[in-house]
Length: 319
Image (cartoon, rainbow, N blue to C red; front, top):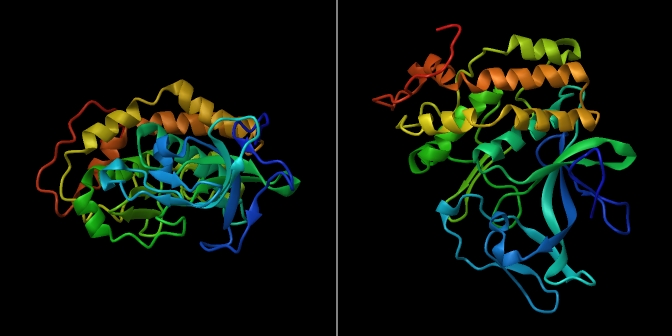
């Protein structure tokens, strides 16, 4: 792999040295299954790849079975394990199961939305699969994320009531995060919960710049500036509000410089213009201090929560 500015992510060289091998789309025309050629260092020490063992002589990788559900990110499937990289110690070439997103006519900002939201989700501690901006052939931009499951295949739809009951901390984090990034498309197929592996939160292409009128991203952001996400799929299943204050604090702790760095990467990559970059950064900074108020506006949807501990300390122009 090589790093090429201005992408600030892994850019794959052309064959035979490696590139995206795109397989038939499994989640819609805008997401394709891919095999990603990467260098892999220290398999048994990387938490994001789970507890893996490497068979001697270039064999496959397998789970040791020691990963506990509390460990969070779970296991990312290794499609093929190759030879050790010449001149290195403990570095091998592998192919990793992954998904790659393109922009489409009806979702012209899908790559932008998924990259920014997923990157910020990782920053606050949500179990978002690792991802990066990429370039397809002919310099078409895309967003790639590792495939989450025990074998790298697409995970089954989450059972929402089980997830909210057994993992209320993560469920509360998903709700708070979706309020921050104005994600109106959370459902049982873009959450994964495998008790023996952990939780994964993915597919954020309909957050932030969501279906802009006439392709006007700034108008879309202005319209959604103080909009609360209503009808969240997890709200009726959550049984406690005790974790919301921590998630609101986590979201509020993301600094202005980090937000502008993430958004600026998309400008550097040619995904947006300067006006949209500045508007998106301001949108995120504005909403990060109002997450409690957005949850509070939808409090009637939390039918199983008997007491609330949201606290105060936010600015809310509409309360």
